[in-house]
Amino acid sequence: MRPQQYKKITVDGIRGLILAALDTGSNAWVGDIAMKMTSDQENETYAWLGNVPGMREFIGGRTPKEISENSFTISNKDYETTLAFRNKDVRHDKLGMIKIRIGQLVERALDHPAKLLTSLLLAGASALCYDGQYFFDTDHSEGSSGTQSNSITSAAVSTTVPTVDEMAKAIMAALQAVIGFKDDQGEPMNQSATAFQVQVPVTFMATALEAVTALLGTGGKSNTLPALKGKFTVDVVVNPRLTWTTKIAVLRTDSAAKPFILQEEMPADADGFGETSEYAKEHGKQLYWVDWSGNVGYAYWQHACLVTFV
Image (tube, rainbow, N blue to C red):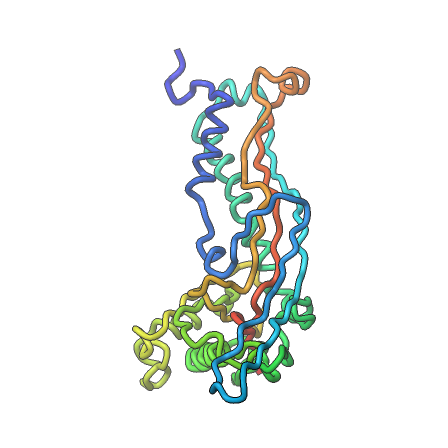
């Protein structure tokens, strides 16, 4: 009699492991910067309405204003990741090994929205958003907003190795830019912002973390960001997929409106061809997979700022 851990695993058992991981795994930062939208068709068109006008003194009758409208479309795409197990490996399975491989399969599926959103960040300085400008651009303008930039620069002695103080100043400059943005009526649109996410490549990991957590800056000087504790929250996300060497991105996270849209037509789901399937009998293999259908897109550029060290 085989030891308990060597018992062959069933199709439902493998599918159950996948679904359990799908329920518990997550990239938390994705939900902080992307609005999740449910889709029930191939393409979804979003109508972007402008903001309502501010109050004015009631003199000379009413002065109604029409709300501006922009629209853009996000098309869903189908994605999959599949594993094959030989029948004899499943029959004599050491359950731990299958768990490891299935865990890796699920991690790939769960990580996919993060991968797509990272691609949006990387392309943000050359890809158009709803207003016809690049998502990260120096000359956004809508209605009475005036010209606004969410692509700024910050000084550093070494652009690829900024100091803690230089990183703190860059983050503060981005916060200031975001909080100062005006809507198409010329009114502040981020005046209540208090929570932000800083996306940095791995090379900036130590500097960025120290910039937002250290009590003292270089040379014993007071570091600005920790002094703002209780007023602002700044969370550092170290994103290994970012290929930037001189840039960081700061994004607002405490608004219902987000910088990006995560559109989902079909949530990640698992299935497979098990031991008793015709596929397994014909090929001597069992297949298990995870499918996901959806896409990502740019939303509010006003909730994001790209900083380039110069």
